[in-house]
Image (cartoon, rainbow, N blue to C red; front, side, top):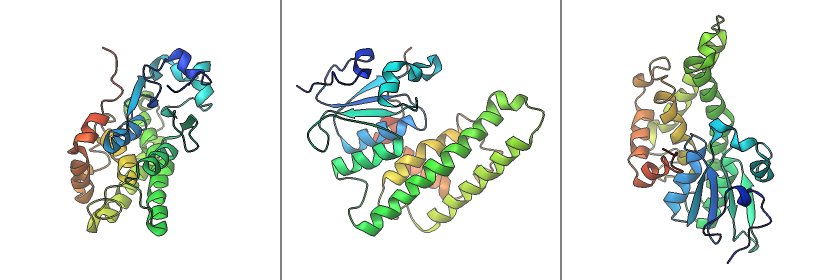
Length: 235
């Protein structure tokens, strides 16, 4: 049995099965990237719900694994050298899990780096822009008299959807015929933008053709459907 006692986070969220990957997350667009990936690969794991609304990521136990205080994070008890490995940042975790499982990331060098560039596109552009639009459109930002921040993020989010629309105009998935970590990284954010953030109309989502079809294809995957609900929120 693996010994995870060197990770303080396991004292706050004990591992029932320390021999499998420990996932510390919540069903947010960033969080579900990893739960979807774990469901898609079939790698055994144990999810732990982190209540970001109660600021649990800012406690010393969580910060010991991710000093940036954000979900998701993982511990793999069987890391590359056979020793436990802790990781944070969803993009890094996706690449690690893809390599571990041998799935959803090509080993052919050019395709591998091209896939990673689309993961970084999500990390650097889609996530931050869609998140800011959600704040200014749905949450406290809507109370601001100055509407220029909302318009800035609306326009940029619409532009980014256009980048995806062009990319998907002649392919089923972001990398062509193969479903990859680039799709896994991006699906939850597009779903959240038009769903939870209620921005469908202001970004003119229904004027697009290829992005909605891609989103439907992704959301129809059983592993995606499961991963979107993991870890389950407490009742």
